[in-house]
Length: 190
Length: 145
Image 1 (cartoon, rainbow over the protein chains, first blue to last red):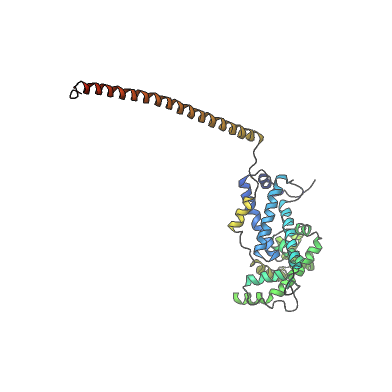
Image 2: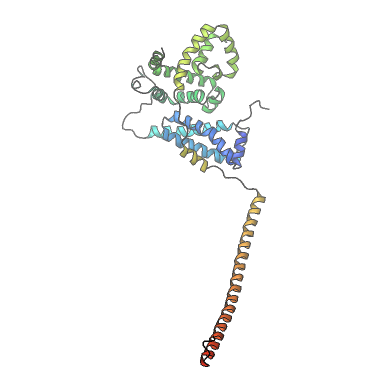
């Protein structure tokens, strides 16, 4: 016997599997923005994020007719697919020969350099892109996708303690990157 | 819950206790009420970063993307009965079309036959008229006609 709450998407997925056009629209409205946001924040590229979101949805359509409710939540399964696709692309980005060295590194002592001339929103985006991938993944899943710690840890195949550590380190790094920005924002409000 | 654990959770999950591990939310809330000034200070630091993170919004999916996604969605399934009915309907439509075509051909043939007959009658009448006219002219009765 399990005390897991019922999958809120189960009924919709069942109807999608039967080809119900209203269910297709409803599931797309519920999941496409979510998958797009996940991919965008993981990859930092709008076009690649669209490709990933589309691929996740296509796989969801394929999965729906044979989906067995109870094994895992459909939303978790979609996140797993999306993260795998994102990591495939990140790996390819790393393997691609580059003319200049990548800036995908942990923030150093003066990490905010280069961010100051940008819009605040763009600076936040750039700061998140500068995080190491696992820290970024933890923050994207917990903060932006609003997954619970147990679900996020399971998706990342790590313990809850390890997830907490990644979150703490990620947020500390972001605070360092964005602190001058926050000071400016607070000055603007004063 | 110890104050250290409260700080750890704020550091990891941010200022909103609803994002904290469910199992620890009640104890965290209790500590917040017991030490409101300290808790507020602790959460405010986390809230500053939360506010900044909230500025990074991703635009909604474009219409083109939504259309592409829907185009690849499963189509409505048809039951065996409706498939059979659909096939029967197909056969029925075919038979009906063949029947209509046959009927049209039949009607066409009958029309042609009737047209042939009426042509014969018209020609015969015309010839008859002509022969009467010719005979009248021959016998000097043109004006009466």
